[in-house]
Length: 352
Image (cartoon, rainbow, N blue to C red; front, side, top):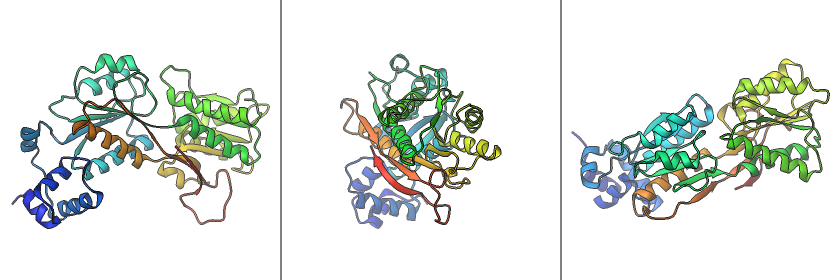
């Protein structure tokens, strides 16, 4: 026999209306009350009747999240975090993979039926502001993740990538490294993450009075392990190879570590390496990877809550720019330690 909302209310010691507010994702519920109601829902195995909810409120309780690739750890962890936060808010998540292609990102914006989902969280790689405006023929609320797409009508959650890259580069410079290379530049209008991180890298070098040495900005086809390994090989073949490398993603940094090990280069003694993202794999590499962590749990929470705010009493609010935090985690790829691995890293600085 199905569990009724009244039974959940009784177990949690709250009103049926409060349970309804939690299930429907309304934000104005005290965290302690929300936690108590969620515990009762879990214990009793309560499942909302989506058809009845849709008839009453015009909402399905389903949101969508669209990311470039689910086989890339950062995006997989981000999608998982969105699912977790949405479940706490009483929502189900539909996950879509766009492969970073314009047509698939446009399809995610305009092609998912509004009678199926209440809203969309999109991490675009290829779309620009004009694409979004042209492709948004639906009133379904949209929250953007990732890099700034200016002049849009949508809420936007991102990390300050210039500051994150500057922090990573400054860490390498603080170790006395003077030939700091970068892996991850991209020659594409849509490569906004690469452009911003390159900007932060250059800012840190300029502030230290250091030039970008010839060949020390390595262009890549994508943020992959293979790209990182190939770029590291090219750096080692330079007449003046680097003594430190800032990789624009952890995946590329892991590829660089592999190439350095294959070439007999000691990390961090000969070359220090740092990445960005703090994917789980970075804590288990050899050596463990220093990185600038993006808090995917915070990003997911900010995005889901922004979407639910639009669906409740914020439909007419102006679009909001929300910046999530980032943090430098120092591990063995830049500073050797005697701590037992794998650890979370030494938390040296935070920004955002």
